[in-house]
Image 1 (tube, helix red, strand yellow):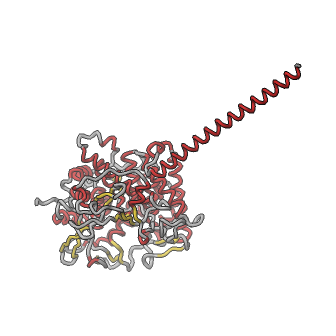
Image 2: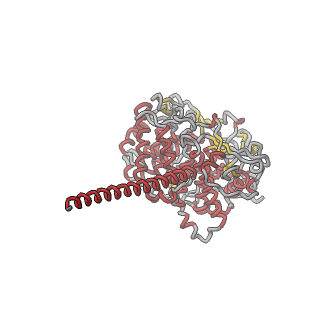
Length: 578
């Protein structure tokens, strides 16, 4: 009987083991099913919510590793240019060739890239550009150049390289004086642009003939937005050299603008000026916002006064404070399905209906508004100021809302890259004049609703590697420390890395259609890819004490210049009473 009991015991134990094993499998299957369900719910939530869980997980990411990824992309882009198109003004990564914008070349890509290399501590790659600047580049060329582009890209790039070579120890060299020397040489050849009767600079200048040239389009007009940009570089050059000529030339235009500015209610105006006779015509254009941007970045002359005036809307030439308020009232409206805020256009002028169109170029505006509200200080600090009020809180909310709209230009496309221009689905009511006089609804954070509101037309579907959105993301992150801005920036960078890379080592290019997978390549790398887009992404993923916003200004091409609180010369403009 004992063996039978043993067999019974064995059979009982075996059955019990199988039962326990089956129960364990069932429990495991249940746990896996629940986990899978959770993942699917989370995935669908993140997919449909453009904000997602970034607010919660962003602080746990390895931002140093992401910063290095941006640096690696810059290295690939630069090295491919160096190998295939060195010294050329343009680079075509697909064909592996370069081309010039003038017979002898002017070093657009070389100069635009200098300060980014310095920020990224790419000291070993600075030697060749230094030598090329000193031995090969001459501005004594039979060539006319755009005054605005040459100032922000080339003069700004040289001045930024000079500044950072004194600021960053690893960028120093016995030959760093070459940057300032070249800046002086270039600025002297740009001075004839200021010799119009009105003082408003000519749109172009001939380098070797010392002659200003009216614009070849728009009846020879000059743009307020472009002309105002010239002061930052010219005045910093006066500070460096002690030569007040550059300061006075830039200052003359500001005095004219202060005397001839338009209505304080509607300040979004561009002055179309007859350069031969000193006459003004008014044309409503969105580029006034760029003018406001430059007046803000001019906060070093003196910084405190400019920022105070921007906040109060008083005392700034061109009605910058009132201008931003006027732009908000006149141009900002909402979309139909998700109430996204966007900056519309006024093709028929003030009083006419809005056009539901916004260029990617406008996406620097969120960062501008945040800078105006806080002066570049952390929001947590700014909110403790006695001067902080509901108006400034509203400015920060508007900055965030517009930032979401700019991010949405990326989020709704198949590639995750933004088109050059977005059109919006808006009601006739939302496109009536002065939408700012009506309450604007809160934005809905649903990607499905967002996709109903964005319209990408075939002719606008290209992506040129533009920096404006990542510029504002960088500023918004520094001011608010909300990790969502970093996460949005990482997704944008990842899309660039995935869809714009050419081969293994040929660099990165613009694309023709952001809604095609894969997107057709455009075979052109813009210099601002190196000067701006990758620079702002690198800074977005950098520690917050690296290049503080309160110590520097970024010019229109993202070239870095110092805040100077004490200057030998002061602004000479004053506003006449109305």
